[in-house]
Image (cartoon, rainbow, N blue to C red; front, side, top):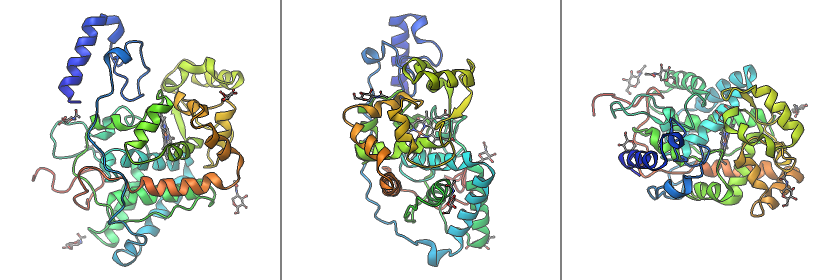
Length: 354
Ligand code: HEM
Ligand SMILES: *[C@@H]1O[C@H](CO)[C@@H](O)[C@H](O)[C@H]1NC(C)=O
Ligand SMILES: *[C@@H]1O[C@H](CO)[C@@H](O)[C@H](O)[C@H]1NC(C)=O
Ligand SMILES: *[C@@H]1O[C@H](CO)[C@@H](O)[C@H](O)[C@H]1NC(C)=O
Ligand SMILES: *[C@@H]1O[C@H](CO)[C@@H](O)[C@H](O)[C@H]1NC(C)=O
Ligand SMILES: *[C@@H]1O[C@H](CO)[C@@H](O)[C@H](O)[C@H]1NC(C)=O
């Protein structure tokens, strides 16, 4: 949906509903589950039919892609990730999420890292609602990139650095029990638009919306359930779940309520049991009603419940599924393929020349 159409819709809804219903960020548009739905939402704010998205194919990617091209690259990334995760496990969570948010928007092309493109005065993905004041780990990517450019310049894409960093963060945070086979060979894109981050599912999404947003990227419902298990690490802001305290386990809700203390910007741990370990605890939390978002809780619905209980119960099963699903997520392609190997991960090459 074009921006001007969105704007017209907001104005229309504001006109029909009066100022109280559509003020500030509480516009009736639900932004794919990122804004708490208002009762007007189904009437006035249907989700626009976005551009068609090709399914993951992964052609062009291969394992050990840099073994001959830049033999030290993967080691440099691993060392940078290890150092960061040892200091703060939350950065590892940030790196895993960075990969998800990169791949879901324009495919895995490092568009999520850009804050400088040739599209003048246009906000990049980093400014989008799901990303702003939230994504972290950029400095790890930048540090690895600088060291890699010094070792072998113009060879390793930022998109591959993001993918390898997510793999390595998964390994360290799982204490070595998650080993993702991650191919390389991606290229970096030259565009990044904040408005396209509405393709990311939001915390207020229901199960059908979650399935649809993953299906749009070629991922199955089971893979959606599997990848949601990443909410066993990292943090989240109270604004995304404080409306559902009454639906949670009462003791858990009371603890969260105290932590949030009325401030929507406060961060809390997503997994209260094993906060910094990438493990299957998330699925037990779903069954125990001790998860934060509506989008987590709805996985207990009839269509996905069997997978949740299986992941919670069977040792090792979720870990293997997570490895495969992360690899598949790394093969999502956008309409445009990556075009270059950036020199600096947060800006396109030759800014201003094209
Ligand atoms: C299923 C749909 C999903 C929804 C609705 C969702 C939503 C969210 C939200 C709202 C946050 C908190 C952001 C904030 O408060 O600033 C978050 C955090 C996080 N998400 Fe998701 N997410 C989803 C899937 C995923 C997937 C597929 C992954 C990775 C495989 C992932 C990894 C993470 C991680 C690691 C964090 C914590 C980040 C940090 O601590 O910096 N999420 N997610
Ligand atoms: C997103 O924003 C860009 C830049 O402002 C604009 O050119 C594009 O048309 C917008 N896309 C949609 C789908 O609104
Ligand atoms: C862009 O982000 C990087 C970090 O990835 C930061 O160092 C740089 O100052 C930012 N530049 C602009 C123009 O915001
Ligand atoms: C990088 O590559 C270019 C072209 O291949 C070369 O001219 C340059 O000396 C290399 N080194 C640095 C540090 O830029
Ligand atoms: C991590 O693994 C090592 C050896 O594989 C084991 O000794 C250690 O207890 C594990 N740590 C955690 C936190 O599970
Ligand atoms: C999950 O769904 C089952 C079956 O409908 C129900 O009995 C159970 O109470 C639900 N659990 C939670 C935490 O909502």
